[in-house]
Length: 131
Image 1 (cartoon, rainbow, N blue to C red):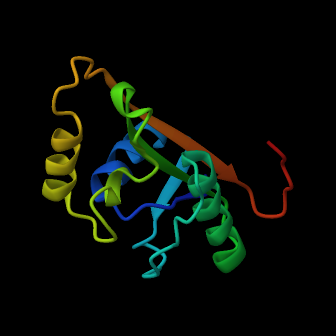
Image 2: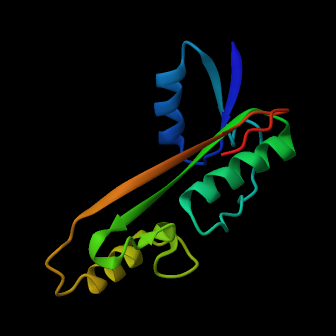
């Protein structure tokens, strides 16, 4: 069975992916390989951040890896907070502060349509794939 690393620190996401891929892959988490680094998410897009995380693991650990980045995109805010969803209210990940700022920014907006969008990047050790 092939091993595939899922570059996330979220145990619930790891559990879900393991259940989905159980018959085909031995899915490892960052915790399983002892990765304690806070992998930088400095790209301006969800796609870029997912790719940064996956490439980091391949470069540092030599393992096939996939990573994801998810953002809340609100129509009335031009797609914001998007890539900044986890840090919408500043540098710290504070869900309550993020929700409070989101609601404040939506005051008076009749259109509150929004979507969560997830992007997944797969990087295979020793393979060069362009997207």
